[in-house]
Image (tube, rainbow over all chains, first blue to last red; front, side):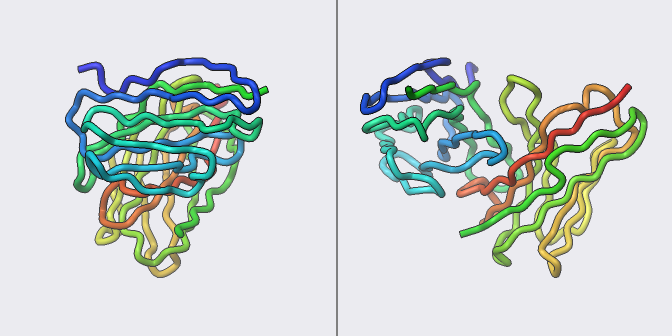
Length: 113
Length: 113
């Protein structure tokens, strides 16, 4: 199993550009989520999904869109990049149920200039 | 929504001594409290968790305690070793699972040889 695969690893965008961060998992996990990690602010939930066709907002959803057309994929779209979106983005997945770990991807480091 | 506060933000201890990290949560409906460890440049990984129907849980040198009345929980690491140096995150959620898991801001633990 590859686990949770995120692409790209690094990305530089100009203000106003759009892009999609890709996330795929091969563990048949129902739950998938996106977090951003900023210094001193921990991991903040952007969007999450409890299954194909179902998505919901987390703590900091503004400026981001998601979709879940398949169990495996959960892409995160930046509609019009802003410098405040400079961050490290982690995708994470898990089975539903208690005591089961979130499996994180390796992260995408995004810089918006 | 849930708010998780974590203290201290940085902690340095001599190798062999104990380390304690504390978290408080705001939503009394939260019932699942995992701890994640993130080594430098790597993804977060689950190290231990506790549910609201349990007051304490141990796994070798790591233990977590929960005080539901006070809405706080703590991570205890005994006999610290250099490989314990990392950033530790506490988190809280409802439904005994990872859905809408809210993280604290992290504690950077440094073990001094």
